[in-house]
Image (tube, rainbow, N blue to C red):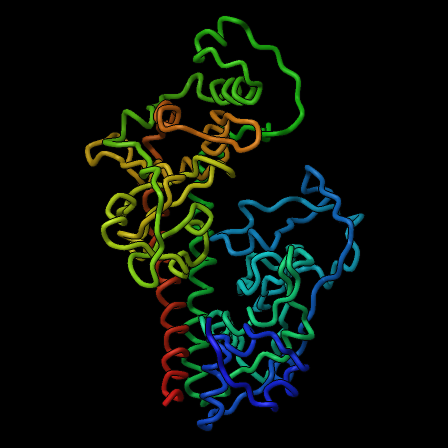
Length: 450
């Protein structure tokens, strides 16, 4: 049990909050110590134009983008490209679209469930509809958005925001409470330096997503119109079922037939034939430690900045879960078909056994970059989804992944590999810039802890 003394002013200045976790909070203690030593702070509400949510409304989703707009939830806003998992929400039945629409350089903060995740909206996400469980922060000329984003993304700000949480079943914070978050007012030159790093990081992310889209577009002529989980009738011959591992599930038979039809007159190779190894990490009990090797779940590995994890395992445990630069990881349970390329910034990180590891052979006909582009394309994702099994939680296995057919477009090899290589370079550098900006702020606050 921990105890501490709380100054009366600390209670009266914080809307009379009496919760122990508020006053013993790591971020709050750091900020109070820095303030005591002379660092100037202003409340968030005083240095920005607006802090608000889009409001609660009934969401009506549609299948065609002709009748709707992309919609991202608080859960998926942290993905490397939220548009990959965006639903389509009805234009007709979505009220207050101006407030609900995301704007470039707007800062988002998740405010329900997982509280305190921070996202900077880039130009490619402008106009997307955001969930009501996301707080929007509109920045004006009082503070540079890059500097504010960096501080809000820091561990100091994140833990401070946790002290504002209320609710036992679904944790929440409110915009009016968040407005009270203290923001350090550091020298203009320092703020500009941080801001420049974040602006460059944002530009690199936009460029990275553009390059990956160009790489996957090569496979667009093979696009499968059917979406996994949609309602459809189809006939399947018994001979087809007999030859397809005797699987009777509709999802497998419908999608695999559509994929096979697209590849009927095209040269292809299987993933197994191009790989030296396809495997998962060990299924074992993990004990997390305070410091050690970063550990990523399959949802964390897909984030725009997967290095910002709060879980660590010791070096002995990490050996069995470690992934290497150049490997391809794809999810094998829960949400399927999400694939990442292991970049330099997460080389030797430990990743959950729910990520299937694909190690492409150096002497293979296709490269790891070509295979990654295929698995990120429409037909690649559908090829993965076709093999799903299970009723409550869907699963994939390594054997099925090995059997997936990859079309070989020899004349496009160089173009795809060039775009994916540049994508990796941009994405990796964006993470480095962001981490550098956040680290500079944390170190500056450290200077005021003496």
